[in-house]
Image 1 (spheres, one colour):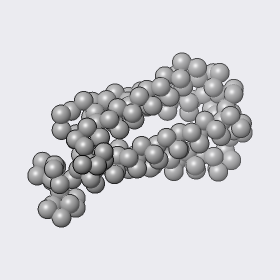
Image 2: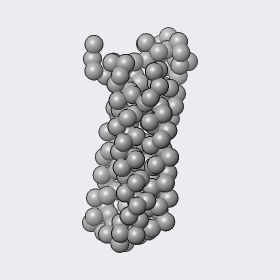
Image 3: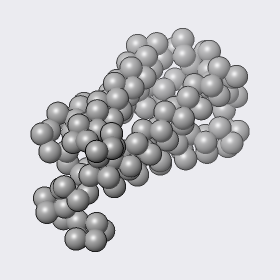
Image 4: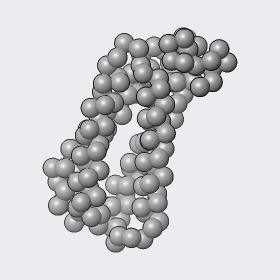
Length: 144
């Protein structure tokens, strides 16, 4: 059995997603002013996304703790993670803010993290679909 097909793979990836979002969100909420000064990102953006990340971390932890991963919700998480990456890139190329080199690194680190997590989540969903198809609404061919 492949590591991707393991019944614990998706929960493990969701725990990693929850942990990374909790850490990033906590940093952004606790050190909003300092991060705004260092990154060139606006404090309201850092605070707002920090709070969102903390709420999302709780939701991801809930999904990770289920004995049967909620595949439809995890599918939405995959889309959301890719959307977050696109929004981060759009923020950088928009030129709306005088983002510092550290700010670019902060945003690009988030892009890298969510793209890797989304790919792992998508891979886990594809590899485990045969074992959970009857429960999740997937057709026998594995399509939504």
